[in-house]
Length: 111
Image (cartoon, rainbow, N blue to C red; front, side, top):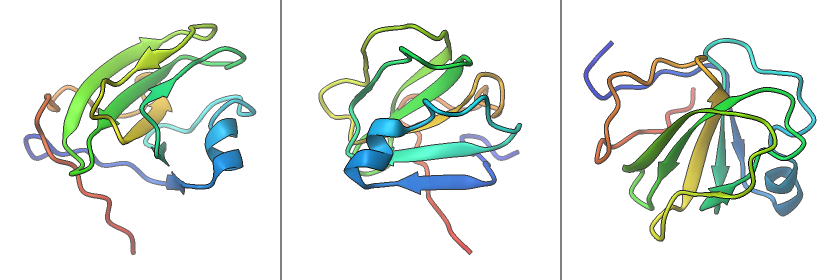
């Protein structure tokens, strides 16, 4: 893995209001390596979630603002900060986040 790189597959890209509202709430989990990118999202909650998640908050340039690991179900609002524009959600431990740091820039590449 390259320094500052994150690889996830499959990746769901969510933009619509109802899809963003639903997020991962109705899921029992995600397979290892899978993620969901939620646009227009600066905060999340895990009330009603069935599994812990990892979060990567990104700004408008896709730079990492903050990384939250192992967020347990039932947690009220978690903010990514004023500049957060999107979030990457994955099942806790499902992605290798160790090499990521605040300020790294991610790319969303589709086939």
